Image (cartoon, rainbow, N blue to C red; front, side):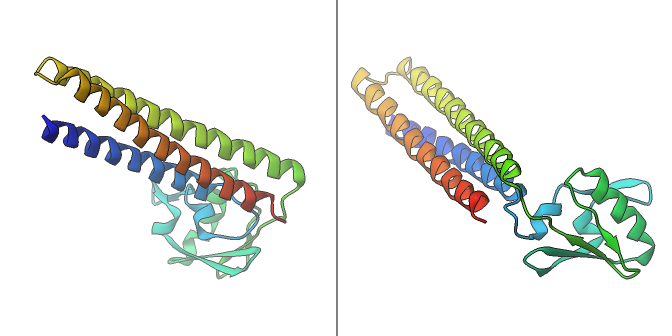
Length: 187
C-alpha cells in the first residue's frame, strides 16, 4: 500500500512542479521595466504564410537596460517583424534602421506598475487553483485505495501529507509573487 501512496505523492509533486513552472513562465512575460528578450516571447510573425514565433526568425538582444534589438535572419522580414511586434499589443513602438529593429522600453508609470502587480497576482491565484485541483485528484486517488484495503489511519496520514505538500507549493507561489511584486514596484 505504501508503494501506491508514494506513487500518488510523486505524481502529485510532478503535477505541482508543472504548475510552478507555468507560473514562473507567466511571470517572465510580465515586464518589470527592464529590457529582456523574454518580453517578446509571445510575438508571432507571419513567415511566408505561417505564424511563427519571433525567436525562430530573428535574434533578440538587449542593447542596454531599456533597449531591445531584433535582428532578422532575412532583411526582407523587417516589415513582418515590426507588424508582429505591434500586433502583439505589448505597448512597444519598434524603430527600423534598415538592419534591425530597435525597441525602446518606456518607463512604467505608477498606474501601469499596479496593473502589472494585479496581473501577477491573478497568475499566482491561477497557480494556486491548479495546485488545489491536483490536491483534489490526489485525495480522490487515496480514497480509491481505501476500497483496496487502505486502513483509516493510513488514509488520514496520507491526506495530511498531501495537505502538507500543498501548503509547501502554495508558499512557493506566494514567495515567487512577492519577488515579482518587489521587482515590478522597484523604480
